Length: 113
Image 1 (cartoon, rainbow, N blue to C red):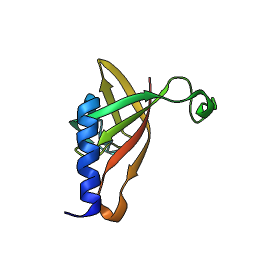
Image 2 (tube, one colour):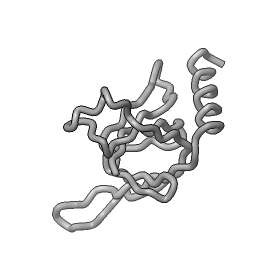
Image 3 (cartoon, one colour):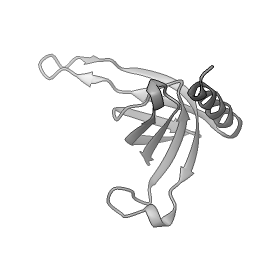
Image 4 (cartoon, rainbow, N blue to C red):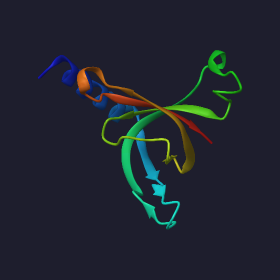
């Protein structure tokens, strides 16, 4: 097992230990000609929902309504998703992937209520 595989396993076990279940719903894309929706899907993962420190809230990019969701690599979120955590639904504003050497470790997702 490689160094990054060990990191992925450690991240997954820590998020499972301290996190909670999260559900992603992907609205898919709308064909502008036919109006048909394709690619809609959903998935579950485990994540940690934390508030941003006050010094990172600038009122434009990060607002007081934003939270950071750290999720394991079992589902790849995108900007078309919404995420439900503890019965509250958030929109996905930004997704940052930790991906050294082509191995997805975790995703840092900025969500907004």
